[in-house]
Amino acid sequence: MSKLVTILAPAYNEEEVIDSFYERVIEVTSQILDYDFEILFVNDGSKDRTLECIKRLRHKDAQVNFVDLSRNFGKEIAMIAGLDYAKGDAVVIIDVDLQDPPELIPEMIKYWEQGYDDIYAKRENRAGETWLKKWTSSAFYRLLQKTTRISIQEDTGDFRLLDRRSVNALLKMRESQRYTKGLFSWIGYNKKEILYNRDPRVAGTTKWNYSKLVDLAIEGITSFSTAPLRFSSLFGIVISLGAFIYMAFIILKTLIVGEMVSGYPSLMSIILFIGGIQLLSLGIIGEYLGRIFNETKNRPLYLVNEYNNDRVVVKYEDK
Ligand code: UDP
Ligand code: MG
Image 1 (tube, protein in one colour):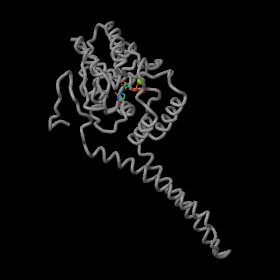
Image 2 (cartoon, rainbow, N blue to C red; image 1 turned 90 degrees about the vertical axis):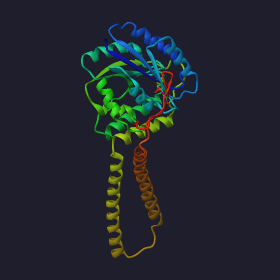
Image 3 (cartoon, rainbow, N blue to C red; image 1 turned 45 degrees about the vertical axis):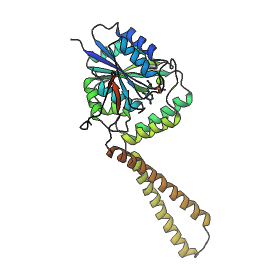
Image 4 (tube, helix red, strand yellow; image 1 turned 60 degrees about the vertical axis):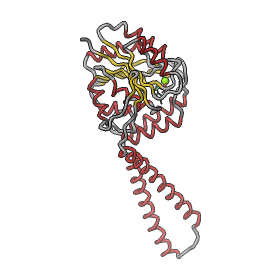
């Protein structure tokens, strides 16, 4: 029996592109004869006709499977849902908007056969993105890299082929606030980079806006490092030290020159400064406390409405 490769595509409001995505993928996979393919769509609670389009494809092609989530959970969760349902010996994660060219899949499979566990596509250019997005993204990567010990690949998205053992490793990580890009690095194994040019979206609009990107950035830093916490303790030490020196200075000054009641502006600015730092530190602690709160609830990561037209009921024992 030949090996099965799952092509995992999370989709949220993608009615305009589902069909062209399917056709481009089939064009590629039909050329690869030694493998079986499963195209697994995860419908992430789309509000348009995405699910209907997927069902139509499933109706005419048994290679197409789909998981329909009970609501929109976001791409990170949609991916883990897809990995849960993927049956392949390898899984290719790919966007349906055709920004990730399916034509790279044969090359990925080639390296997979050479024994690599995680073949990721690194973009050489980022067509169709504003300079502001490029700049913020590169600044964020630099910051993230400084705060964490594991190396996180820059300009690399979720487009990659994962061997079954990488997939299983990812499945072990059931944290609810997921920063999957970091998780790929965290698991390690043999990685191989291939380069490609990222095309603009063929149709539809991006689901990202700046507030979501800021969320993702905070997610990335807080889930992979406790450096911000250390930053607030360092700041505390520095300020206490400064305060101590200043106190000594004031005492000496009072002893030598005598007591004076002036100094309202300096007093005010110091109080405001310390207050600001305290709030910032509380905020940082709060970020981490919030994630502890979310993780301890131990809720399922997602709920499935149907899998391949079958209604899914959560079993009580289920994780
Ligand atoms: N996506 C998803 N759930 C969401 C948002 C996006 O499954 O809540 C999917 C989307 O359908 C697409 C992929 O994630 O296949 C990447 O989304 P998008 O193209 O909007 O992101 P960008 O390429 O702009 O980073
Ligand atoms: Mg896209």
